[in-house]
Length: 335
Image (cartoon, rainbow, N blue to C red):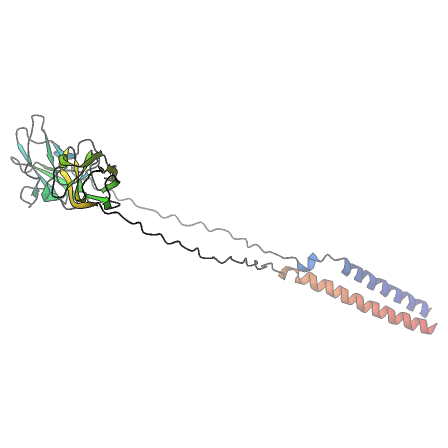
């Protein structure tokens, strides 16, 4: 009876060990390497809303007199000394005289504040409707380049009647004229460019003998209108029989004679120009970047418990198999 019991125990242990090994072998390999990701449950904290207190702004007292500045056929108050302007005003005493000044500060306006008169034509007569209008040119005494000026109007009869323009006249940079190639031959076509010729208006461009300032004596001439920012480009064709030598360029606004530039020795005719050889540029080889494999950031902490359990079951199965083999061996010897 003892032998039979011993035999059954051995068979039972062997069966348990076999089942344990079977479970171990049938476990998917992905369980040993699965990643666990823990998502933190964060509850956003509402941010505090700042309360802004608006302080009412004091309203400035507006004068009953006004003065405005404009230019013919343009909305941009940009030009040079000599540019045509129109000054208008309202709210002044009829029959009075208004003196006009230039000022850099809109808060500085008065008869005795050291302001510069608006050129030589700086007074206007007020009409019965309390308005005045004066067409004049921007003065030389307010000709600092890249500077903006206001107009100050003060009544000569009632100094308390005064106003400052809300607009500003800006003096542009000095006009320029250039040529791409200063030494050419008779019959060549030359390209002439200009900058800062504002306000945009029709210009006459002419090539004259050195020492001349009269564009009507031009050997070659043409007309051009610059862009709104004062840039232009035009071409002149030199006569084939033009004498060799140095020549002057003249550029002048047709309706504004003060907008003029005379440049002596602008071009030399009769000297052939040898083009400068262009040096080729050898391209530089660029290294091809080698892609770096992305690091595996998968976490294995979540599967450690499962792995330990599987290996424990495997170890237990092996031990049971060994015990079963020993018991079978002992049983066989007793038989």
